Length: 170
Image 1 (tube, one colour):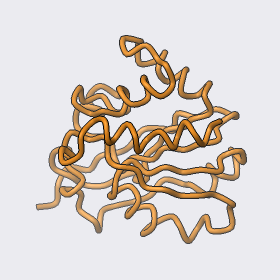
Image 2 (image 1 turned 180 degrees about the vertical axis):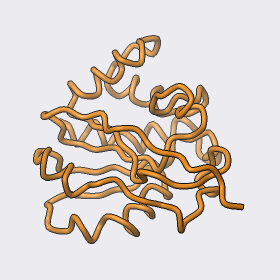
Image 3 (image 1 turned 90 degrees about the vertical axis):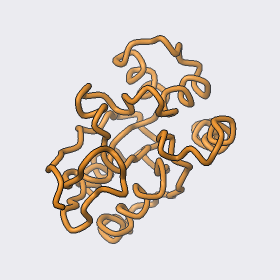
């Protein structure tokens, strides 16, 4: 089964970005809504709201503005892939193409930390992009996925693990 060809979003980024948070590929709900982490059960915005003191009822553009003003950028490792549904495990590996991280890191030289939102984002980055960006002085760390599919970890444990993003910005 090949799956449907899907394309990720443009990065959410500003010149002040010091941290880049990478997902693998937006899920069906996110693609439909054209918003990062749009699935209501995804813990990403709840985590960011608590860490950065963002109103949980803020509009999507307000949330993005707050992330950018905090020095956080969002993007996905994959530019395109084929997948049925939203699960990372449904991504057809041989259809993966990566985003252009070399150009991104050249254009945004203040980025010094990359946090992967889950194992698939990290694995895809290592497979497709890491060798191309080895010359940049960037630290990489995988965090637990905020996806509702990663239900084996409590929200509190995820929030605690994600505090490193806030600590990095201090």
